Image 1: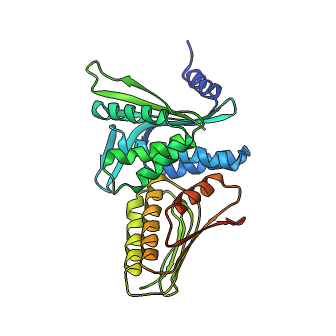
Image 2: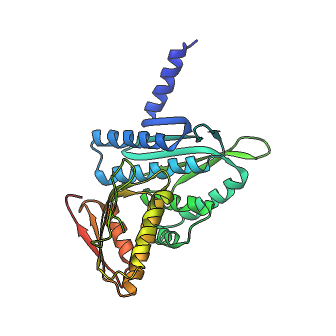
Image 3: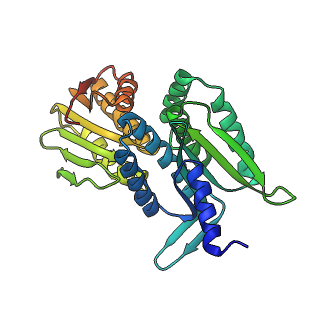
Length: 186
Length: 129
């Protein structure tokens, strides 16, 4: 039987084998976005990543993490001082010379379907259509919550080299909550 | 109106709004924790200045290296105000500085520039950006 350290080593090996630069699972907040974002920039600079590619990866990372922070259904909050954290996972890696960013978080059923529709719609648009759609969304008056997510998703789609992949895992037999997972290749 | 000067942070740009000279600057990265609350006072001050009786020319220099989608929304609102002021007869020049190798900032500049008719929007490839 594997020792506990061997189990963690297998887990580490698995991550490394997937080309993972880093992976975080747990509760996220804006200050962690700052820290992880700086770590990502530094690691890309150290590996001499092309500056334009590094900017695109960083942009996808920021929009993905901010989506988790804003829209995850799994949240914890405290009052003194006022704090709120959002549960989710974010993983950045390299596969066959291309960076990817994977994000996942729990969403209520009511959120899952509109999100799926938006991503399906975005997947059908080419670069020029995405650019035009982004411009259109920028012009809209102060948005309601759901539309706020879509401009971030358009930004992710614009910086990606192929349509955003996404999938849903239902977490209960009644389909009340789902783990919504998004993968973008840059 | 008093000058607004805000030092840059990891996540917010340098801000220099010198109303007495009609000179405005935004430089660096922008993905504030809450971009609406970061930009709201700046947008309000700019609007008040542009809608005042002041007729001095306005020069706005931006040298952004990265901004997230909610900051883009704030920039767009600012540009709409500047273009509206241009339409009312104010002399407005917006300079969009970007590093010549920065494809994303160049493309954003081209996009934002499409909305200007009455205010001048100039693309400024600037190696030191």
